[in-house]
Length: 94
Image (cartoon, rainbow, N blue to C red; front, side, top):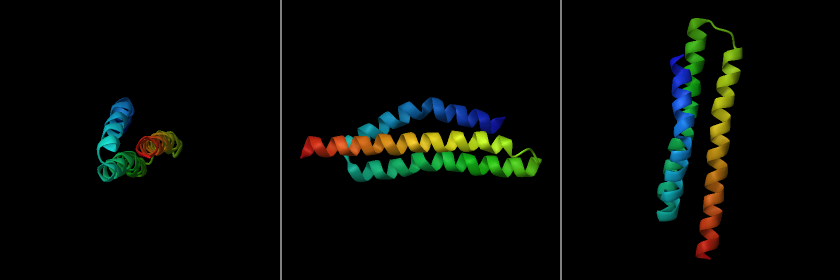
């Protein structure tokens, strides 16, 4: 239940975090890369935490499928949005 709340908070904050990533990309490309990796680590850490709790409690692995979806979707959104931001940034400069 606790991990579910963390996932929900992360998904609610995701648009704000992507906007911050957008602002960092406009200012400094290197800084935005570091921030992108931090954003990508959050769902992975949540997934690993969820896997360990599921194994300790001995729950069904179906729960992990939902967690995996909650992990993969934000990662795809972050990667695609950052790619769009950097390509837009390149066309503006060039």
